[in-house]
Figure 1: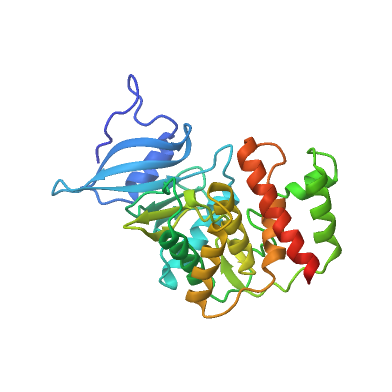
Figure 2: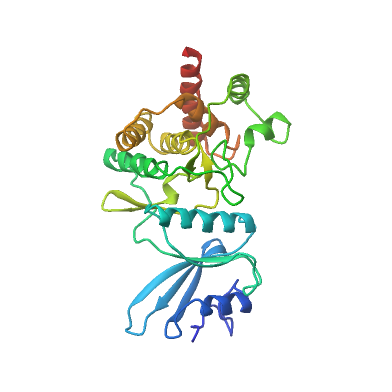
Length: 304
């Protein structure tokens, strides 16, 4: 197999070790040519791999291995999640190969297919797209699953972070609103966590959109088992920040139509999602939208 030169000098693929490249080549047909290799995140994993078949047709794959922002455990979680997604026919990339213990690649690694489309949502809100996004995560939640080592229980979105706890212990500054909301969430019993499959990090950048619909969810490195509200609250928060007050309602409508049921404890999960954000890393507009979304959730909690 030939690997096309990329980068400067005699670098085959900047950032990829020789054992990793050898493993990648071993997973492909001997007649498939590896072309350009480029980072999808500032010179780090994941990496986009261009491939050429013997007939001259081209296709692509995504290679994942640990980096400063992705742990070996997250590589394993992403691979396990893609296996579950394929088993249940969910819209997601398909796992092509994995070397999770690094026996050949000398690092934890996985290779997955690419779903055609874009992860860039329109600047103006699209009701149809918001409904489709809600429906897409509802399909994930049809899968009943027990927690397992690589797909553990997820009590909140992006569960590897706990920014609310960081504020409580003084590792991160807080605000009066964030402190009040956190105190109210801590004072009530968390809803039951039914054993359904959750993506864990649903935002526009982790969707693939084509023809106005969500073709797939990608980047499953924080997937696991939990309450549907983990995903629903996170996506509602994300679109509230990106769009306006009406956007979360359309996500909810799409989810409820697809699932055939009403979402339970929505204000709780909205608040949990808003609280698991850094205090100051958003710009002023985004922080204001986050806070508006959180205030609405807390106001609804008080009514119950």
